[in-house]
Image (cartoon, rainbow, N blue to C red):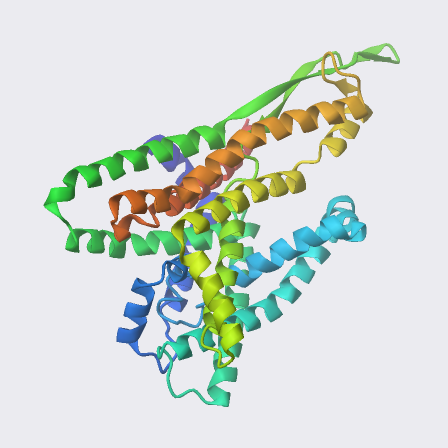
Length: 423
């Protein structure tokens, strides 16, 4: 391990990339601690302690929401815009063609449209959050000018984080949005440890030890699933051209158990956030019917069993959805056929596509169920132990471990590329 770290920092270009990303994360943490004026901190603290949904939203914003900072929305609106655009590709074939068939230029145009629709999403979410905080007396004495100023500031904060995330992604060491969320989780660890120590109960020592053991098992399980893959044997037909023989080789097509990584968790959390926020906003309405419906929805999402079930289903669905977006069996089968490759025992073309689709669905099922179980594990642990300080640990561990593994793979790939060039 020490030797690998030494190799990383010996490469000047790679070292500069890592320092650049660390500097970006420091800027993000500084922005997350610049508060918006007019906040009642005592009321804010009690409000967050009694609302688990806001705790999940705060994790997205890296602590920015808890401080009602200039980046209080985090990257949530950008993630929501990405989900909407990905869903639109299933409705409009032209968008799917733009994203998958028109190369880098098409993807850049697709990403630009995603950035455009992030702005209205951010403005709507900022308005909803301000109204919610105002109804709970967290924000006081707001004029129309203050409203507009805060909405513009919060929207600009989201665009700023989106830009920082893209700067990180351009360096080729991890996904920028995931790393920003990772930084927010890691920054909250000291506070969580302090709360755990402050509420330490010697009579529950066995519970804490059991949770620690469960955390270790969870980390091991995440590593195993993320690294697990099904190798499909591929053979290439032998060809004779001008007296030269080409092909006749054998290789493997690796299909990962969890091809979607941590994205399904992030997508599912984004979707779970909105109903609760909207319901809490309309619960204070003067219209009794609207307030009643909003209160019922808020009660539904406050029910831990219902929340966990919906969360689990969304994680499974998004795992399949994102896998379908990133891996196209039809495209893989066509490329193999053009290159003279085939799966032994399977005819090229449509049969190969159906075979790859069948294998992908089977291995994705196990990965999706595992991700869903890990996602709801914190709620199960909290329900059994009753210790609130352990309530968000599982999701945090999942995101942290997945992001670290993905970043290490990309760093390793860059090291291998430079070793090959040196050779």
